[in-house]
Image (cartoon, rainbow, N blue to C red; front, side):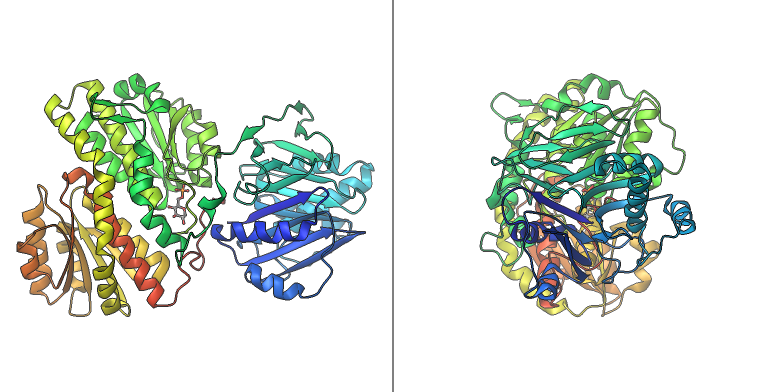
Length: 613
Ligand code: G6P
Protein backbone atom coordinates (compact mmCIF):
# COMPACT_ATOMS: atom_id res chain seq x y z
CA UNK A 1 0.00 0.00 0.00
CA UNK A 2 1.01 3.66 -0.06
CA UNK A 3 4.61 4.25 0.84
CA UNK A 4 5.93 7.36 2.52
CA UNK A 5 9.49 8.71 2.64
CA UNK A 6 10.87 11.96 3.93
CA UNK A 7 14.22 13.55 4.65
CA UNK A 8 15.42 16.74 6.24
CA UNK A 9 19.00 17.63 7.09
CA UNK A 10 22.13 18.76 5.33
CA UNK A 11 22.38 16.14 2.57
CA UNK A 12 20.89 16.30 -0.91
CA UNK A 13 17.34 15.02 -0.32
CA UNK A 14 16.47 13.85 -3.84
CA UNK A 15 18.63 10.69 -4.10
CA UNK A 16 17.58 9.67 -0.60
CA UNK A 17 13.92 10.06 -1.51
CA UNK A 18 14.21 8.17 -4.82
CA UNK A 19 16.13 5.31 -3.22
CA UNK A 20 13.59 5.25 -0.41
CA UNK A 21 10.73 5.02 -2.88
CA UNK A 22 12.50 2.16 -4.64
CA UNK A 23 12.85 0.35 -1.33
CA UNK A 24 9.11 0.79 -0.75
CA UNK A 25 8.12 -0.45 -4.22
CA UNK A 26 7.50 -3.91 -2.80
CA UNK A 27 4.49 -2.61 -0.88
CA UNK A 28 2.54 -2.24 -4.16
CA UNK A 29 1.56 1.05 -5.82
CA UNK A 30 0.33 2.67 -8.99
CA UNK A 31 1.81 6.19 -8.99
CA UNK A 32 4.70 8.07 -7.41
CA UNK A 33 5.80 11.58 -6.55
CA UNK A 34 8.33 13.75 -4.73
CA UNK A 35 8.39 17.30 -3.43
CA UNK A 36 11.60 19.14 -2.61
CA UNK A 37 12.04 22.22 -0.48
CA UNK A 38 14.50 24.56 -2.14
CA UNK A 39 13.58 28.20 -2.17
CA UNK A 40 9.94 27.20 -2.46
CA UNK A 41 8.44 23.77 -3.00
CA UNK A 42 9.17 21.83 -6.17
CA UNK A 43 6.70 19.03 -7.04
CA UNK A 44 7.01 16.10 -9.46
CA UNK A 45 4.48 13.29 -9.67
CA UNK A 46 2.99 10.89 -12.20
CA UNK A 47 1.12 7.66 -12.71
CA UNK A 48 3.37 4.61 -12.96
CA UNK A 49 6.49 3.31 -11.29
CA UNK A 50 9.40 5.13 -9.66
CA UNK A 51 11.34 4.76 -12.90
CA UNK A 52 8.50 6.59 -14.71
CA UNK A 53 8.79 9.34 -12.13
CA UNK A 54 12.54 9.59 -12.77
CA UNK A 55 11.88 9.84 -16.52
CA UNK A 56 9.20 12.43 -15.89
CA UNK A 57 11.63 14.54 -13.85
CA UNK A 58 14.32 14.23 -16.52
CA UNK A 59 16.70 17.16 -16.10
CA UNK A 60 14.34 19.09 -13.81
CA UNK A 61 15.73 20.83 -10.73
CA UNK A 62 16.10 18.44 -7.86
CA UNK A 63 18.03 20.53 -5.36
CA UNK A 64 17.05 20.76 -1.74
CA UNK A 65 18.00 19.47 1.68
CA UNK A 66 14.52 18.41 2.63
CA UNK A 67 11.72 16.70 0.84
CA UNK A 68 8.99 14.10 0.84
CA UNK A 69 8.15 11.21 -1.49
CA UNK A 70 5.22 8.90 -1.98
CA UNK A 71 4.10 5.75 -3.76
CA UNK A 72 0.30 5.70 -4.06
CA UNK A 73 -2.00 2.69 -4.07
CA UNK A 74 -5.31 4.16 -5.19
CA UNK A 75 -8.25 4.25 -2.82
CA UNK A 76 -10.08 7.54 -3.54
CA UNK A 77 -9.79 8.40 -7.22
CA UNK A 78 -8.25 6.43 -10.07
CA UNK A 79 -4.47 6.15 -10.46
CA UNK A 80 -3.47 9.16 -12.57
CA UNK A 81 -1.01 12.07 -12.51
CA UNK A 82 -3.36 14.43 -10.70
CA UNK A 83 -4.37 12.02 -7.95
CA UNK A 84 -0.74 11.03 -7.29
CA UNK A 85 0.82 12.48 -4.12
CA UNK A 86 2.20 14.88 -2.86
CA UNK A 87 -0.73 17.30 -2.86
CA UNK A 88 -0.42 21.07 -2.60
CA UNK A 89 -2.90 23.13 -0.64
CA UNK A 90 -4.85 25.53 -2.81
CA UNK A 91 -2.65 28.44 -1.77
CA UNK A 92 0.38 26.42 -2.81
CA UNK A 93 2.47 26.87 0.34
CA UNK A 94 1.70 23.57 2.13
CA UNK A 95 2.37 20.12 0.69
CA UNK A 96 1.33 16.75 2.07
CA UNK A 97 1.63 12.99 1.52
CA UNK A 98 -0.76 10.53 3.08
CA UNK A 99 -1.23 6.81 3.58
CA UNK A 100 -4.72 5.76 4.70
CA UNK A 101 -8.24 7.09 4.37
CA UNK A 102 -9.90 10.22 5.74
CA UNK A 103 -13.40 8.90 6.35
CA UNK A 104 -15.23 12.22 6.80
CA UNK A 105 -13.53 13.82 3.81
CA UNK A 106 -16.84 14.51 2.11
CA UNK A 107 -18.30 16.73 4.84
CA UNK A 108 -14.95 18.51 5.35
CA UNK A 109 -14.67 19.06 1.61
CA UNK A 110 -18.15 20.59 1.44
CA UNK A 111 -17.25 23.08 4.17
CA UNK A 112 -14.02 23.99 2.39
CA UNK A 113 -15.80 24.38 -0.94
CA UNK A 114 -18.27 26.69 0.77
CA UNK A 115 -15.27 28.78 1.85
CA UNK A 116 -14.05 29.03 -1.71
CA UNK A 117 -11.63 26.11 -1.98
CA UNK A 118 -11.24 24.55 -5.39
CA UNK A 119 -10.04 20.94 -5.65
CA UNK A 120 -7.93 19.55 -8.45
CA UNK A 121 -7.92 15.87 -7.53
CA UNK A 122 -10.46 13.27 -6.39
CA UNK A 123 -8.46 12.42 -3.26
CA UNK A 124 -9.30 12.67 0.42
CA UNK A 125 -5.68 13.81 0.87
CA UNK A 126 -6.23 17.12 -0.88
CA UNK A 127 -9.10 17.77 1.55
CA UNK A 128 -6.75 17.35 4.49
CA UNK A 129 -4.03 19.62 3.12
CA UNK A 130 -6.58 22.35 2.43
CA UNK A 131 -8.03 21.96 5.90
CA UNK A 132 -4.54 22.49 7.33
CA UNK A 133 -4.10 25.60 5.18
CA UNK A 134 -7.49 26.96 6.21
CA UNK A 135 -6.71 26.49 9.92
CA UNK A 136 -3.27 28.04 9.57
CA UNK A 137 -4.71 31.04 7.76
CA UNK A 138 -7.49 31.64 10.24
CA UNK A 139 -5.41 31.03 13.38
CA UNK A 140 -2.07 32.30 12.14
CA UNK A 141 -0.28 29.41 13.84
CA UNK A 142 2.77 27.22 13.18
CA UNK A 143 2.46 24.31 10.74
CA UNK A 144 2.62 21.73 13.54
CA UNK A 145 -0.26 23.39 15.39
CA UNK A 146 -2.37 23.64 12.23
CA UNK A 147 -1.75 19.94 11.57
CA UNK A 148 -2.72 19.07 15.15
CA UNK A 149 -5.95 21.04 14.93
CA UNK A 150 -6.82 19.60 11.53
CA UNK A 151 -6.31 16.06 12.80
CA UNK A 152 -8.79 16.76 15.58
CA UNK A 153 -11.38 17.45 12.90
CA UNK A 154 -10.93 14.34 10.78
CA UNK A 155 -11.44 10.66 11.39
CA UNK A 156 -10.04 7.67 9.64
CA UNK A 157 -6.64 6.11 9.28
CA UNK A 158 -3.58 8.03 8.31
CA UNK A 159 0.13 8.48 8.28
CA UNK A 160 0.91 11.95 6.95
CA UNK A 161 4.01 13.99 6.30
CA UNK A 162 3.69 17.72 5.68
CA UNK A 163 5.99 20.59 4.70
CA UNK A 164 5.35 24.30 4.38
CA UNK A 165 7.10 26.89 2.26
CA UNK A 166 6.97 29.23 5.27
CA UNK A 167 9.01 26.92 7.53
CA UNK A 168 11.90 25.68 5.38
CA UNK A 169 13.45 22.40 6.54
CA UNK A 170 10.65 21.64 8.98
CA UNK A 171 8.69 18.41 8.53
CA UNK A 172 5.53 17.61 10.47
CA UNK A 173 4.41 13.99 10.61
CA UNK A 174 1.55 12.17 12.30
CA UNK A 175 -0.01 8.74 12.47
CA UNK A 176 -3.22 6.97 13.34
CA UNK A 177 -3.48 3.30 12.36
CA UNK A 178 -1.02 3.61 9.46
CA UNK A 179 2.65 3.04 10.23
CA UNK A 180 5.36 5.68 10.28
CA UNK A 181 8.98 5.38 11.38
CA UNK A 182 11.41 8.25 12.02
CA UNK A 183 15.14 7.58 11.68
CA UNK A 184 17.49 9.79 13.67
CA UNK A 185 20.71 10.40 11.76
CA UNK A 186 24.10 11.19 13.22
CA UNK A 187 24.37 14.65 11.70
CA UNK A 188 21.15 16.00 13.14
CA UNK A 189 19.26 14.86 10.08
CA UNK A 190 16.03 12.86 10.03
CA UNK A 191 14.57 10.18 7.77
CA UNK A 192 10.92 9.21 7.62
CA UNK A 193 9.29 6.18 6.07
CA UNK A 194 6.33 3.82 6.22
CA UNK A 195 8.69 1.07 7.33
CA UNK A 196 12.34 0.87 8.19
CA UNK A 197 13.56 -0.41 4.80
CA UNK A 198 14.42 3.04 3.35
CA UNK A 199 16.04 4.14 6.62
CA UNK A 200 18.35 1.29 7.56
CA UNK A 201 21.24 2.32 5.31
CA UNK A 202 21.49 5.72 7.01
CA UNK A 203 20.80 5.00 10.66
CA UNK A 204 19.79 2.24 13.04
CA UNK A 205 18.20 4.59 15.57
CA UNK A 206 14.49 4.88 15.00
CA UNK A 207 11.32 6.04 16.68
CA UNK A 208 8.06 4.32 15.76
CA UNK A 209 5.31 6.92 15.97
CA UNK A 210 2.38 5.73 18.08
CA UNK A 211 -1.26 6.26 17.18
CA UNK A 212 -2.34 9.84 17.80
CA UNK A 213 1.22 11.20 17.95
CA UNK A 214 2.52 14.14 15.95
CA UNK A 215 6.19 14.85 15.30
CA UNK A 216 7.73 18.22 14.62
CA UNK A 217 11.06 17.62 12.97
CA UNK A 218 13.64 20.37 12.69
CA UNK A 219 17.14 19.41 11.47
CA UNK A 220 19.82 19.78 14.10
CA UNK A 221 17.29 19.84 16.92
CA UNK A 222 15.88 17.13 19.19
CA UNK A 223 12.86 15.29 17.82
CA UNK A 224 9.68 16.82 19.29
CA UNK A 225 6.65 14.59 19.79
CA UNK A 226 3.22 15.52 21.11
CA UNK A 227 -0.27 14.11 21.05
CA UNK A 228 -3.35 15.36 19.25
CA UNK A 229 -4.37 16.77 22.66
CA UNK A 230 -1.07 18.71 22.78
CA UNK A 231 0.64 16.63 25.48
CA UNK A 232 4.39 16.30 25.14
CA UNK A 233 5.75 12.77 24.53
CA UNK A 234 9.33 11.64 25.11
CA UNK A 235 10.57 9.81 22.01
CA UNK A 236 11.41 6.15 22.60
CA UNK A 237 14.46 5.45 20.45
CA UNK A 238 14.93 1.84 19.36
CA UNK A 239 17.74 0.12 17.52
CA UNK A 240 16.82 -1.54 14.22
CA UNK A 241 17.60 -5.23 13.85
CA UNK A 242 17.42 -4.99 10.09
CA UNK A 243 20.48 -5.50 7.84
CA UNK A 244 20.93 -3.84 4.48
CA UNK A 245 21.92 -7.04 2.65
CA UNK A 246 18.55 -8.53 3.61
CA UNK A 247 16.93 -5.93 1.38
CA UNK A 248 18.96 -6.81 -1.73
CA UNK A 249 18.30 -9.58 -4.27
CA UNK A 250 21.67 -11.17 -3.56
CA UNK A 251 22.18 -12.51 -7.12
CA UNK A 252 18.67 -13.91 -7.57
CA UNK A 253 16.46 -12.67 -10.42
CA UNK A 254 13.61 -11.88 -8.05
CA UNK A 255 13.08 -11.36 -4.34
CA UNK A 256 10.47 -14.12 -4.41
CA UNK A 257 12.99 -16.69 -5.65
CA UNK A 258 15.54 -15.52 -3.09
CA UNK A 259 12.96 -15.84 -0.35
CA UNK A 260 11.91 -19.33 -1.49
CA UNK A 261 15.57 -20.37 -1.34
CA UNK A 262 16.07 -18.75 2.06
CA UNK A 263 13.58 -21.08 3.70
CA UNK A 264 15.98 -23.65 5.14
CA UNK A 265 17.57 -20.77 7.04
CA UNK A 266 14.42 -18.79 7.83
CA UNK A 267 12.62 -21.84 9.22
CA UNK A 268 15.71 -22.64 11.24
CA UNK A 269 15.75 -19.06 12.53
CA UNK A 270 12.11 -19.39 13.56
CA UNK A 271 13.08 -22.34 15.77
CA UNK A 272 16.40 -21.01 17.01
CA UNK A 273 16.60 -21.00 20.81
CA UNK A 274 13.03 -22.25 21.04
CA UNK A 275 13.44 -25.98 20.53
CA UNK A 276 15.92 -28.34 22.16
CA UNK A 277 15.75 -31.99 21.16
CA UNK A 278 18.45 -32.81 23.71
CA UNK A 279 16.55 -31.33 26.61
CA UNK A 280 13.14 -32.31 25.23
CA UNK A 281 12.00 -28.69 25.39
CA UNK A 282 9.97 -26.22 23.41
CA UNK A 283 9.69 -22.68 24.64
CA UNK A 284 8.31 -19.56 22.99
CA UNK A 285 9.40 -16.68 25.21
CA UNK A 286 6.73 -14.08 24.49
CA UNK A 287 3.97 -16.71 24.37
CA UNK A 288 5.18 -18.71 27.35
CA UNK A 289 3.97 -15.98 29.71
CA UNK A 290 0.45 -16.62 28.44
CA UNK A 291 0.69 -20.40 28.48
CA UNK A 292 -1.68 -20.79 31.44
CA UNK A 293 -4.19 -18.45 29.80
CA UNK A 294 -4.11 -20.47 26.61
CA UNK A 295 -4.42 -23.78 28.45
CA UNK A 296 -7.45 -22.52 30.36
CA UNK A 297 -8.98 -20.69 27.41
CA UNK A 298 -12.41 -21.59 26.08
CA UNK A 299 -11.01 -21.06 22.60
CA UNK A 300 -7.96 -19.86 20.79
CA UNK A 301 -9.06 -17.69 17.89
CA UNK A 302 -6.62 -16.97 15.08
CA UNK A 303 -7.33 -13.84 13.10
CA UNK A 304 -5.48 -13.11 9.89
CA UNK A 305 -5.76 -12.30 6.19
CA UNK A 306 -4.41 -13.88 3.02
CA UNK A 307 -1.51 -16.28 3.38
CA UNK A 308 -1.39 -15.69 7.12
CA UNK A 309 -4.96 -17.00 7.32
CA UNK A 310 -3.81 -20.20 5.61
CA UNK A 311 -1.06 -20.54 8.21
CA UNK A 312 -3.78 -20.08 10.85
CA UNK A 313 -5.68 -23.05 9.41
CA UNK A 314 -2.59 -25.23 9.78
CA UNK A 315 -2.31 -23.85 13.32
CA UNK A 316 -5.87 -24.95 14.06
CA UNK A 317 -5.11 -28.52 13.01
CA UNK A 318 -1.87 -28.52 15.01
CA UNK A 319 -3.26 -27.14 18.26
CA UNK A 320 -6.43 -29.19 18.24
CA UNK A 321 -4.40 -32.31 17.45
CA UNK A 322 -1.54 -31.82 19.89
CA UNK A 323 -3.01 -29.70 22.69
CA UNK A 324 -6.74 -30.45 22.43
CA UNK A 325 -7.72 -26.79 22.81
CA UNK A 326 -10.62 -25.65 20.60
CA UNK A 327 -9.40 -23.35 17.85
CA UNK A 328 -11.20 -21.09 15.40
CA UNK A 329 -9.66 -19.35 12.42
CA UNK A 330 -11.22 -16.11 11.28
CA UNK A 331 -10.74 -13.72 8.40
CA UNK A 332 -10.04 -10.46 10.23
CA UNK A 333 -12.26 -8.51 7.85
CA UNK A 334 -15.26 -10.76 8.53
CA UNK A 335 -14.69 -11.24 12.24
CA UNK A 336 -14.87 -7.56 13.05
CA UNK A 337 -18.14 -6.91 11.29
CA UNK A 338 -20.19 -9.93 12.28
CA UNK A 339 -20.72 -9.29 15.98
CA UNK A 340 -18.70 -12.33 17.08
CA UNK A 341 -19.02 -13.87 20.54
CA UNK A 342 -15.76 -13.14 22.38
CA UNK A 343 -15.23 -13.28 26.10
CA UNK A 344 -12.35 -12.77 28.53
CA UNK A 345 -11.90 -16.55 28.45
CA UNK A 346 -10.79 -16.40 24.81
CA UNK A 347 -7.25 -15.94 23.58
CA UNK A 348 -7.14 -14.13 20.25
CA UNK A 349 -3.92 -14.53 18.25
CA UNK A 350 -3.27 -12.33 15.24
CA UNK A 351 -1.03 -13.84 12.56
CA UNK A 352 0.54 -11.25 10.29
CA UNK A 353 3.74 -10.99 8.31
CA UNK A 354 3.73 -7.19 8.20
CA UNK A 355 2.07 -6.62 11.55
CA UNK A 356 0.27 -3.70 9.90
CA UNK A 357 -2.76 -5.21 8.15
CA UNK A 358 -5.58 -2.77 8.92
CA UNK A 359 -8.35 -5.36 9.29
CA UNK A 360 -6.24 -7.54 11.56
CA UNK A 361 -5.39 -4.55 13.74
CA UNK A 362 -9.03 -3.52 13.95
CA UNK A 363 -10.10 -7.08 14.81
CA UNK A 364 -7.57 -7.10 17.64
CA UNK A 365 -8.95 -3.85 18.96
CA UNK A 366 -12.42 -5.38 18.98
CA UNK A 367 -11.15 -8.44 20.86
CA UNK A 368 -9.43 -6.19 23.40
CA UNK A 369 -12.66 -4.28 24.02
CA UNK A 370 -14.42 -7.60 24.68
CA UNK A 371 -11.79 -8.49 27.28
CA UNK A 372 -9.93 -11.27 25.45
CA UNK A 373 -6.20 -11.77 25.82
CA UNK A 374 -4.58 -10.72 22.57
CA UNK A 375 -1.33 -12.15 21.23
CA UNK A 376 0.53 -11.78 17.95
CA UNK A 377 2.65 -13.85 15.60
CA UNK A 378 4.36 -11.25 13.41
CA UNK A 379 7.41 -11.06 11.22
CA UNK A 380 8.16 -7.35 11.24
CA UNK A 381 9.81 -6.37 14.49
CA UNK A 382 8.29 -3.28 16.08
CA UNK A 383 5.18 -3.42 13.87
CA UNK A 384 1.83 -2.15 15.09
CA UNK A 385 0.40 -5.59 15.90
CA UNK A 386 3.56 -6.54 17.76
CA UNK A 387 3.21 -3.39 19.81
CA UNK A 388 -0.49 -3.48 20.67
CA UNK A 389 -0.69 -7.14 21.68
CA UNK A 390 -0.24 -8.39 25.26
CA UNK A 391 2.49 -10.77 24.13
CA UNK A 392 3.52 -12.91 21.20
CA UNK A 393 6.32 -14.33 19.13
CA UNK A 394 8.21 -13.03 16.15
CA UNK A 395 8.65 -15.41 13.25
CA UNK A 396 12.21 -14.17 12.55
CA UNK A 397 11.95 -14.94 8.82
CA UNK A 398 13.82 -11.72 7.96
CA UNK A 399 12.39 -9.06 5.63
CA UNK A 400 10.04 -10.44 3.00
CA UNK A 401 10.03 -8.18 -0.05
CA UNK A 402 8.22 -10.27 -2.69
CA UNK A 403 4.52 -9.49 -2.50
CA UNK A 404 3.64 -13.19 -2.70
CA UNK A 405 4.39 -14.51 0.75
CA UNK A 406 6.66 -17.56 0.86
CA UNK A 407 9.18 -17.72 3.70
CA UNK A 408 6.84 -15.80 6.01
CA UNK A 409 4.26 -18.59 5.58
CA UNK A 410 6.66 -21.41 6.44
CA UNK A 411 7.95 -19.44 9.41
CA UNK A 412 4.43 -18.81 10.67
CA UNK A 413 3.68 -22.53 10.41
CA UNK A 414 6.93 -23.26 12.24
CA UNK A 415 6.02 -20.96 15.13
CA UNK A 416 2.51 -22.47 15.24
CA UNK A 417 4.06 -25.95 15.38
CA UNK A 418 6.21 -24.86 18.31
CA UNK A 419 3.19 -23.33 20.01
CA UNK A 420 1.14 -26.51 19.59
CA UNK A 421 3.99 -28.61 20.96
CA UNK A 422 4.54 -26.24 23.90
CA UNK A 423 0.85 -26.31 24.81
CA UNK A 424 0.54 -30.06 24.26
CA UNK A 425 3.50 -30.72 26.51
CA UNK A 426 2.21 -28.41 29.24
CA UNK A 427 -1.27 -29.91 29.07
CA UNK A 428 -0.02 -33.48 28.93
CA UNK A 429 -2.01 -34.21 25.79
CA UNK A 430 0.97 -35.62 23.89
CA UNK A 431 2.54 -38.72 25.26
CA UNK A 432 6.28 -38.46 25.86
CA UNK A 433 7.44 -40.68 23.05
CA UNK A 434 5.26 -38.87 20.49
CA UNK A 435 6.42 -35.52 21.81
CA UNK A 436 10.04 -36.50 21.42
CA UNK A 437 9.52 -37.98 17.96
CA UNK A 438 7.66 -34.86 16.82
CA UNK A 439 10.39 -32.62 18.19
CA UNK A 440 13.01 -34.53 16.22
CA UNK A 441 10.84 -34.38 13.08
CA UNK A 442 10.41 -30.63 13.39
CA UNK A 443 14.09 -30.02 14.06
CA UNK A 444 15.11 -31.61 10.74
CA UNK A 445 12.56 -29.71 8.62
CA UNK A 446 15.17 -27.17 7.39
CA UNK A 447 17.18 -30.01 5.80
CA UNK A 448 14.02 -31.42 4.23
CA UNK A 449 13.17 -28.00 2.81
CA UNK A 450 16.70 -27.86 1.41
CA UNK A 451 16.08 -31.21 -0.30
CA UNK A 452 12.68 -30.03 -1.56
CA UNK A 453 14.43 -27.13 -3.29
CA UNK A 454 16.11 -29.74 -5.50
CA UNK A 455 12.76 -30.15 -7.26
CA UNK A 456 13.33 -26.78 -8.96
CA UNK A 457 14.39 -28.25 -12.32
CA UNK A 458 11.49 -30.67 -12.62
CA UNK A 459 9.02 -28.05 -11.42
CA UNK A 460 10.34 -25.67 -14.07
CA UNK A 461 9.68 -28.30 -16.77
CA UNK A 462 6.14 -28.78 -15.51
CA UNK A 463 5.68 -25.00 -15.44
CA UNK A 464 6.65 -24.84 -19.12
CA UNK A 465 3.93 -27.41 -19.95
CA UNK A 466 1.17 -25.54 -18.12
CA UNK A 467 2.10 -21.87 -18.37
CA UNK A 468 -0.80 -21.20 -20.74
CA UNK A 469 -3.47 -23.00 -18.74
CA UNK A 470 -6.48 -20.84 -17.94
CA UNK A 471 -7.45 -22.60 -14.71
CA UNK A 472 -5.83 -24.78 -12.07
CA UNK A 473 -7.27 -26.84 -9.28
CA UNK A 474 -5.29 -27.60 -6.11
CA UNK A 475 -6.35 -30.46 -3.86
CA UNK A 476 -5.18 -31.61 -0.45
CA UNK A 477 -6.54 -33.29 2.66
CA UNK A 478 -5.91 -32.85 6.35
CA UNK A 479 -2.86 -30.70 7.00
CA UNK A 480 -2.39 -30.35 3.25
CA UNK A 481 -5.81 -28.80 2.64
CA UNK A 482 -4.64 -25.32 3.82
CA UNK A 483 -1.63 -25.85 1.59
CA UNK A 484 -3.91 -26.46 -1.42
CA UNK A 485 -5.47 -23.05 -0.68
CA UNK A 486 -2.05 -21.48 -0.36
CA UNK A 487 -0.74 -23.08 -3.57
CA UNK A 488 -3.76 -21.76 -5.50
CA UNK A 489 -3.35 -18.30 -3.99
CA UNK A 490 0.32 -18.16 -5.02
CA UNK A 491 -0.56 -18.97 -8.63
CA UNK A 492 -3.40 -16.42 -8.76
CA UNK A 493 -1.33 -13.68 -7.18
CA UNK A 494 1.64 -13.69 -9.47
CA UNK A 495 0.63 -15.38 -12.74
CA UNK A 496 -3.00 -14.17 -12.94
CA UNK A 497 -4.19 -17.70 -13.72
CA UNK A 498 -7.44 -18.57 -12.04
CA UNK A 499 -6.83 -21.27 -9.44
CA UNK A 500 -8.91 -22.81 -6.70
CA UNK A 501 -7.84 -24.79 -3.67
CA UNK A 502 -10.19 -27.46 -2.35
CA UNK A 503 -10.26 -30.23 0.21
CA UNK A 504 -9.65 -33.24 -2.04
CA UNK A 505 -12.84 -35.07 -1.06
CA UNK A 506 -15.01 -31.96 -1.43
CA UNK A 507 -14.10 -31.95 -5.11
CA UNK A 508 -16.99 -34.34 -5.65
CA UNK A 509 -19.41 -31.68 -4.48
CA UNK A 510 -18.77 -29.21 -7.26
CA UNK A 511 -15.34 -28.74 -8.83
CA UNK A 512 -15.35 -32.21 -10.35
CA UNK A 513 -17.75 -30.75 -12.91
CA UNK A 514 -14.89 -28.56 -14.16
CA UNK A 515 -12.50 -31.39 -14.82
CA UNK A 516 -11.55 -32.23 -18.40
CA UNK A 517 -8.28 -32.60 -20.32
CA UNK A 518 -7.74 -28.82 -20.13
CA UNK A 519 -7.71 -28.72 -16.33
CA UNK A 520 -4.39 -29.25 -14.52
CA UNK A 521 -5.01 -30.55 -11.01
CA UNK A 522 -2.22 -30.21 -8.47
CA UNK A 523 -2.67 -32.82 -5.76
CA UNK A 524 -0.66 -32.88 -2.57
CA UNK A 525 -0.46 -36.61 -2.03
CA UNK A 526 2.30 -37.03 0.52
CA UNK A 527 2.37 -40.04 2.86
CA UNK A 528 0.05 -39.74 5.85
CA UNK A 529 -3.20 -41.06 7.29
CA UNK A 530 -5.30 -39.87 4.33
CA UNK A 531 -2.88 -40.99 1.62
CA UNK A 532 -5.09 -43.83 0.31
CA UNK A 533 -8.10 -41.51 0.19
CA UNK A 534 -6.12 -38.96 -1.80
CA UNK A 535 -5.07 -41.70 -4.21
CA UNK A 536 -8.78 -42.40 -4.76
CA UNK A 537 -9.36 -38.70 -5.42
CA UNK A 538 -6.59 -38.77 -8.02
CA UNK A 539 -8.32 -41.75 -9.68
CA UNK A 540 -11.52 -39.72 -9.79
CA UNK A 541 -9.71 -36.90 -11.59
CA UNK A 542 -8.02 -39.28 -14.00
CA UNK A 543 -11.32 -41.01 -14.77
CA UNK A 544 -12.52 -37.63 -16.06
CA UNK A 545 -9.39 -37.02 -18.15
CA UNK A 546 -7.98 -34.40 -15.80
CA UNK A 547 -4.22 -33.85 -15.84
CA UNK A 548 -2.67 -34.64 -12.47
CA UNK A 549 0.49 -33.03 -11.10
CA UNK A 550 1.13 -34.79 -7.80
CA UNK A 551 3.44 -33.77 -4.99
CA UNK A 552 4.44 -37.07 -3.39
CA UNK A 553 6.78 -38.44 -0.75
CA UNK A 554 10.12 -39.75 -1.95
CA UNK A 555 9.93 -43.32 -3.26
CA UNK A 556 6.17 -43.26 -3.85
CA UNK A 557 5.22 -45.78 -6.52
CA UNK A 558 1.45 -45.87 -6.35
CA UNK A 559 0.73 -42.26 -7.33
CA UNK A 560 3.55 -42.30 -9.88
CA UNK A 561 1.63 -44.89 -11.84
CA UNK A 562 -1.53 -42.87 -12.15
CA UNK A 563 -0.45 -39.22 -12.07
CA UNK A 564 0.78 -37.45 -15.20
CA UNK A 565 3.62 -35.72 -13.36
CA UNK A 566 5.07 -36.32 -9.92
CA UNK A 567 7.27 -34.12 -7.80
CA UNK A 568 9.05 -36.02 -5.03
CA UNK A 569 9.82 -34.40 -1.71
CA UNK A 570 11.26 -35.91 1.47
CA UNK A 571 8.81 -37.85 3.60
CA UNK A 572 7.85 -36.20 6.84
CA UNK A 573 5.38 -36.44 9.71
CA UNK A 574 2.00 -35.45 8.21
CA UNK A 575 1.64 -32.34 10.36
CA UNK A 576 4.86 -30.88 8.95
CA UNK A 577 4.08 -31.71 5.32
CA UNK A 578 2.90 -28.11 4.62
CA UNK A 579 6.39 -26.87 5.51
CA UNK A 580 8.10 -29.06 2.93
CA UNK A 581 5.39 -29.40 0.26
CA UNK A 582 4.93 -25.65 0.03
CA UNK A 583 8.34 -25.39 -1.69
CA UNK A 584 7.41 -27.02 -5.05
CA UNK A 585 4.09 -25.14 -5.06
CA UNK A 586 5.88 -21.82 -4.58
CA UNK A 587 8.37 -22.74 -7.32
CA UNK A 588 5.57 -23.78 -9.70
CA UNK A 589 3.81 -20.43 -9.40
CA UNK A 590 7.14 -18.59 -9.61
CA UNK A 591 8.25 -20.29 -12.85
CA UNK A 592 4.84 -19.99 -14.48
CA UNK A 593 4.75 -16.27 -13.65
CA UNK A 594 8.27 -15.73 -15.05
CA UNK A 595 7.36 -17.62 -18.23
CA UNK A 596 4.25 -15.48 -18.62
CA UNK A 597 6.46 -12.39 -18.19
CA UNK A 598 4.52 -11.23 -15.15
CA UNK A 599 5.97 -8.87 -12.58
CA UNK A 600 6.72 -11.50 -9.97
CA UNK A 601 7.73 -9.28 -7.08
CA UNK A 602 5.13 -6.58 -7.64
CA UNK A 603 2.04 -8.21 -9.10
CA UNK A 604 -0.64 -5.88 -10.42
CA UNK A 605 -3.16 -4.46 -7.94
CA UNK A 606 -1.60 -6.22 -4.95
CA UNK A 607 0.05 -4.69 -1.93
CA UNK A 608 2.46 -6.26 0.50
CA UNK A 609 1.12 -4.45 3.49
CA UNK A 610 -2.61 -3.73 3.34
CA UNK A 611 -3.02 -0.69 5.53
CA UNK A 612 -6.57 0.21 4.47
CA UNK A 613 -9.67 -1.68 5.56
C1 G6P B 1 -1.52 -8.94 1.52
C2 G6P B 1 -0.27 -9.63 1.04
C3 G6P B 1 -0.35 -11.12 1.38
C4 G6P B 1 -0.57 -11.30 2.87
C5 G6P B 1 -1.80 -10.53 3.36
C6 G6P B 1 -1.85 -10.47 4.87
O1 G6P B 1 -2.61 -9.36 0.78
O2 G6P B 1 -0.12 -9.46 -0.35
O3 G6P B 1 0.85 -11.75 1.01
O4 G6P B 1 -0.73 -12.65 3.15
O5 G6P B 1 -1.75 -9.16 2.91
O6 G6P B 1 -0.76 -9.72 5.31
P1 G6P B 1 -0.06 -9.86 6.72
O7 G6P B 1 1.08 -8.89 6.65
O8 G6P B 1 -1.08 -9.47 7.74
O9 G6P B 1 0.38 -11.26 6.87
